[in-house]
Length: 381
View 1: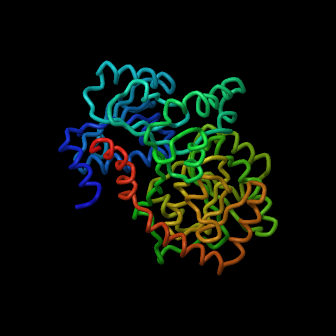
View 2: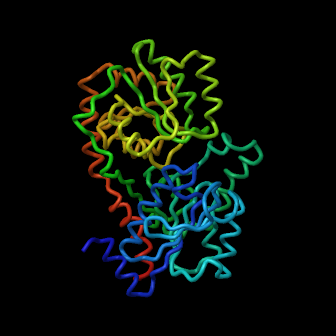
């Protein structure tokens, strides 16, 4: 019997079967990203093991208010901001039905569950948003967001068992007042679907792949600039972007203004099979992101034998082992690392082999067990 099944059986035997998971967005939302993949992976494994899981999130355009996915229920009600008070009130008065335990996923704005929930509960916090607030909101609102995240909310959560994906984020939480013994770090998994295939050849020309929602935090325009500089040393280099988002129009204007259509391709949203094919065929995958909880696209690419070149930030340091499975650098030096990886085939092969080997050690089963463990500990104590 797996550790996960054993923990679930233990919890159910003690009367803890129904778990509510609160998150800003769910996997089918058009704006979903790594956090939503992370949540789906552990929820579907919990449901398969015998827990009754309800995922409470905000309304998403074009999606039904209720759904069932991968063995768990999804309820989408409330706007991007009104979902927080609406959900808290619903849980307190019982409109969401009975539940035995709670998982709060804090993505910038907290649900403040310690104030209103007296049942076993845990917090999942991927990263502190910090400078991201200024990229999305005007100055005064950004200042309020930063204060909420780093000053006002932390005292409420300092005694809450917390799971994060980065050692750097764990250190930040401890600095904000979390008790060290209550903060656990666990790596994100890589689906076995993302594997290399010797039949699939790399592109004939040096190629870079960038995957993600086209939002300010991803800094795709800065990546464009760094690739443009790298092209002075690698003139036939091309860049492909996968994904969409609010920055798409601005990024397209940059490409037109710089006459870069010959080497930058917007692939848009693609199927999972197409994504894997892009991973397999690209020479490297790149990210210029300002902040990440975990670089999911980087480890998916690693599973396909494609090393990463990315900015040296906390979420990348845990998903890329610098000099072993990829290269990390400050944003303004990213072009040097790109050139180094693209022009040295032997080194790139070494990075590729190490990246794929590490990816095989990262499993979603281990993630599901790691997230459930602090919740299970509260039930059995």
